[in-house]
Structures are given as C-alpha cells and as structure tokens.
Amino acid sequence: MESSLEASLSSSGAVSGAAGFLPPARSRIFKIIVIGDSNVGKTCLTYRFCAGRFPDRTEATIGVDFRERAVEIDGERIKLGKGAAAVGAVAGGRVRARWQRLRRREAANQGRRRSLEVLRRETYPVVGHSRTRTI
Ligand SMILES: Nc1nc2c(ncn2[C@@H]2O[C@H](COP(=O)(O)OP(=O)(O)OP(=O)(O)O)[C@@H](O)[C@H]2O)c(=O)[nH]1
Image 1: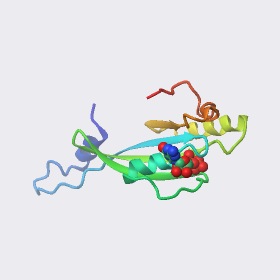
Image 2: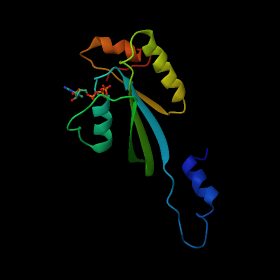
Image 3: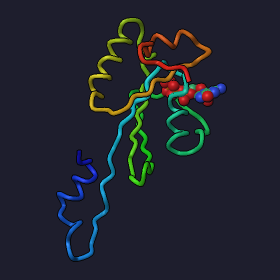
Image 4: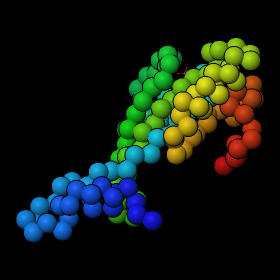
C-alpha cells in the first residue's frame, strides 16, 4: 500500500521531473492525546518529550494544551502532535462524559496516552482500566 508520504511525492509529479528539483517531503502527522486526572504530570510528561527537559514551573492547564515534536523513524520524518487535557476537574459522572466527548473528538488520532499518578489510586478510574498497561 502506498504511504501518504509516497502519495504526496508522486502526486506532485516533481520526483521524476528532469529539473532535479525535489520539494521538501511532507511529514506524516500522528496525534497523541494525554489525558488524566489533574496534577498527575501530563504537562511535565509532554513538555519533557517535546522540549527534552522538564519545565521550570507548571500551572494548571485549563482546557487542552498542544505541543509538537518531529522524529525520524526508519528514515522518515514524522511529526507527533501531543495534546494534554485534564479531566479530573469535572466531578463524578461528568468526568466520564467529558472523556467520551474527547475520545469522539479525537477519533482520528493514531495514538492515545493516559496519565495517572501511581501513588494516588483515586486518579486511576478517571482514565479507565480497559487498555491501561503497567510498564
Ligand atoms: N515527583 C514527581 N513530581 C512530578 C512528576 N511529574 C510532574 N510532577 C509534579 O507534579 C505537579 C503537576 O505536574 P503537571 O505536569 O502540571 O500535571 P498536570 O497533570 O499537567 O496538571 P493539570 O494541568 O492540573 O491537569 C507539578 O508540581 C510537577 O512538578 C514526576 O514524575 N515526579
């Protein structure tokens, strides 16, 4: 199957052109959402991954926070867009409803990451257990 990278190159027609000019290949973009109870480290996790260091100080995220990092995998440049969203600020059943809304909105995402704080068991149910793996 033709990858989107190959498709973008071949549809441009520039690859086989005689002018010797190759436009920059478009990166594929993978979106990952990090979701979890408030204050479990979502911002620090995504900041560390994208900036290579931990933030000097943090503030509670209101709504959703976006970051981006490009990585090279098997010679292909891939952009990872990461969003962190707190669900813990909303109490009770509304937590799950908001989580499900976020899941629907992010249905096109290729990856999801859930954050929880291992020493605070009450943060576990917020993100659900079904596909949580202990690493
Ligand atoms: N000990 C320890 N503290 C951490 C770790 N990661 C984050 N923290 C601290 O935990 C607090 C919350 O971190 P954040 O990254 O802001 O947490 P968050 O989940 O994004 O918080 P909200 O935006 O409120 O949802 C901060 O004081 C961090 O310094 C960790 O791995 N270990």
